[in-house]
Image (tube, rainbow, N blue to C red; front, side):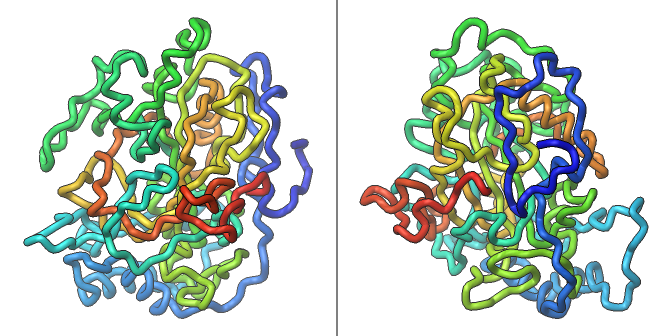
Length: 443
């Protein structure tokens, strides 16, 4: 993509890996506008009142939780109600800063099950194997089954976890992690602690290893060679990582403040504002519409994709910041189809402060998870870290792998998953023909 080109709204404008520069350190960063998705900005229009938006958001987030709407809503209302506040036009002011709800606002972690009653919303990440539909959490929510871009969401953050938090049989699984041949040494990783005992590593969090893929034994000696990381921290060639791209209709889309850390600031950036620009099938700021999944799942989503890092420029993808890689012409069998075999469901935020005893209250939100494991060059990750460091908000605390949450039990997994992609409409899938090919190169 040449500087100055005006892409079609929502188009990824993917630059082929064969155009990757020979000397990675000489990559010249594009401007923030160039590396973010291009969303057509429409004139502002009135949506629901701040009370309606916040009310629906709280209802969506607190269904089944111990916290009460009566306690949480006034705190959120006072925090985000901006009806009488002048618009912030100073480009130096981050409009998303501090939007993550504080402790006691109704979004604290909570006991998943109390007295045999499930208190938490459905959780992530669970089993996304094609056709697997054993989740028993009876959810009233529905995931978005278009692309997240078509739903009006833009990516507001990118981060990744050490190993896969989800499970996809034959692709990435904790059973693979148990076989030492499926990855490099785990000597420096934390041993997973029993529920309720969270080990804090020197890096400020846990280095719990999640599921691994099985590509490592088949890598060549050259592909396993160490890489001279310039920007990413604590990364290991040959390791499996699950990348997450939180998206939101309420993000500062198409502005220099689009990408945020923590990601909660990004996904809730415009919560409480009566009007904000955007586009999408469901309409920005609209909740409860006939075609709109109820509340949060129609406004917040997460893309997830699992990779094994290799020292091989054949697997270079330069735009990982933008979102899940979607292509059907990648090199080798592992990358021949990427981002098109997707499972959609509703869940929560993840991370090692949660397991099957302590749950997240952030949800339900849409998840779109690529069921396949792919190869990715170390330079692709390093380029993404460089892009992150060049954002207006300081993202330096997300340029290393975070620990992986314990695989979520069926009891805490939603019963609403839909297998998207070419196999979604098959007998073995859980989807239907209407969502069989939702992901494409325009994602």
